[in-house]
Figure (cartoon, rainbow, N blue to C red):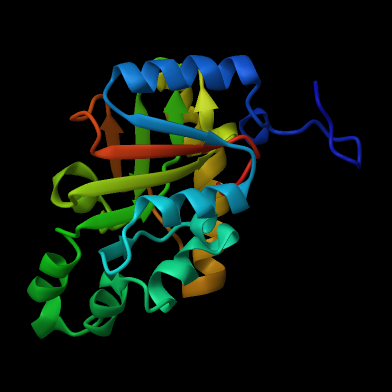
Length: 212
């Protein structure tokens, strides 16, 4: 069993996938209608995102540690190359009278970019959320979806995907939420994505272990 520098066993859900596991998951995802790109690191992932999204496009970024680590969130929301939906979305946050408008703005972008919490070797994708704010675009609203996903999120089955989220991902996200928002997170909504219309969703699989 792999260990960390202090000799403790490393969590299996934090380990990079093997080339054979990546190959198996990629083939299954593509059979289910997802477009899959495999890259070595986050810089390559960032480059791919910029290649995919035409300049001037309307882009919504879901909250994602992976996007932050790659500098993708900053590029899409701060660069004048793109129209940031998140900026409009967050400008209305906290105003009860703007709640409906806010939900509409965050539900039908040209492009949405984010990550997921588990990918199964038989080609299913699982996303966990406290509020569900990223889900409308993922499920239907966005014309194009891009997910940047560390290979450690590849698991054998849907049962393993749920276990990964409950025993590994949630603990890290709950800690992050307390540090950033001063409040606990919650596993309120789970999306299981089995198949997609060909070409709408692109998954960029990063060989490195990145994000939660």
